[in-house]
Image 1 (cartoon, rainbow, N blue to C red):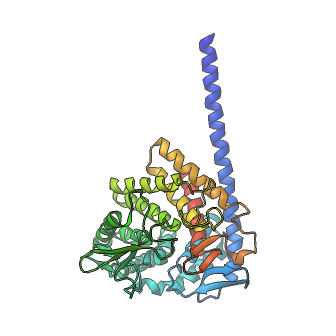
Image 2 (image 1 turned 90 degrees about the horizontal axis):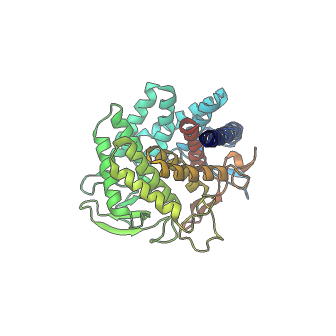
Image 3 (image 1 turned 135 degrees about the horizontal axis):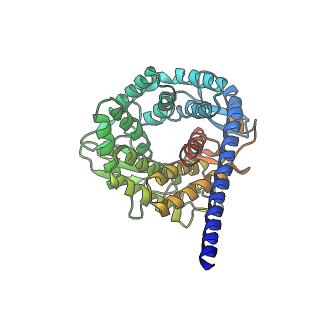
Amino acid sequence: MMKKLLIAVCFLLLNNGMLSAQNKSGKMAQLIEEQFKFADQQYKVLAKNVPSDVMPKTYYEKTGKVETSDTKWWCSGFFPGTLLYIYEYTKDAEILKEAKARLAILEKEKHYTGNHDLGFMMYCSFGNAYRIFKDPSYKTTIDTAAESLSTRYHPEAKVIQSWNSSKKMAGPVIIDNMMNLELLSWVSDHGGDKKYKEIAITHANSTIKNHFRPDFSSYHVVDYDMKTGKVLQKITAQGAADSSAWSRGQAWGLYGYTMMYRFTKDKQYLKQAKNIAKFMLNDPNMPADMIPYWDYDAPGIPNTYRDASAGAVMASALLELAQYADKTERKQYLSAAETALKTLVSDTYRAKLGENGGFLLKHSVGSIPHNSEIDVPLTYADYYFLEALHRYKNWYL
């Protein structure tokens, strides 16, 4: 009798667990569907607000106008990339037409060598286009962009220079640069010159060595002597202080090392990503809703700005990191990512249809030290938000 009772209890617990998991999956599936349907309509509003020869940048409620940029701006790839994520989910022909029109004006930037941002510009856009359509012309564009980016590599210093030299910095390299290594690695792995991936690996190794503190937070900028590789200074451009942990920078690092592990299966990158995640998720200033303040050490916490873009990048990165983690870590990473996404779809962060200039998310921060793009929508917040939803759908439903 006791044996039958134990079997019945085990069956009920197992059944309840399965029902709970199914219920959770169903809710996330519904959430994702709702967000892509909303994005489909909202980005048609944004497209109408942006002239055909430029890209959206942000929106200021006071003026009621969308601020735009030329295609050389580092964010120029995010609008077409976001349109492609929307099309991939909805198959809306109007969205695809808009995406292709924006790709057409961006394509010429495959030759751009003015900074390190070719990955953001060309891989988030043409990388997604090639992944979806396998059009050889898109691959040619990506291959050319990788060659352009490689011209900023300095073999003596073993890094890709981010910005050009100035009176303040001789050879600045920013943590954001980790994101552009995806373009280089992908091209090498898909028939391109092997030197690109070698550059990516060398840069990633130099960044581990020089960008991170003992607690695995990162400096924003490391200034190098490009002839010798000597580190001249470690500072910030967009964070609260040279010694602080600028929140989007931590998310770039988390994403970058998770991605480098995908391409190399080098365990030092996986270890680095896990340590960065540990810093972020355990920081006492990380809010319970998983949308970071603009800097983990920002003055005035909790009465200061959050950064939805940092939360979106972090969520997308954690969803990939969970793929490479053990059961306990996987649960932690998924929980944090889910919490961030549920926060971002709340009325606090997600715009209503027709509002916010056509952008999806509110409350991102560009650069407080420069008094630029403070508490506004930003194209990369939208992009990584939809990328995270796309990843969740493909990997966890």
